[in-house]
Length: 59
Image (cartoon, rainbow, N blue to C red):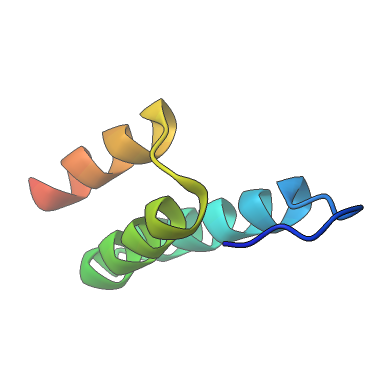
């Protein structure tokens, strides 16, 4: 995701992560995994997201 000068993407990053977590909570694991993949594509991999993706792949 391209960051423009003067913008803060931290809120968007958090909302994107929480959206994926919500689908996981709703037991829609395929959708959650797809959203976590979109998250890592947009914001880069991080340990929390990778952990969630590994879990979802084992479901």
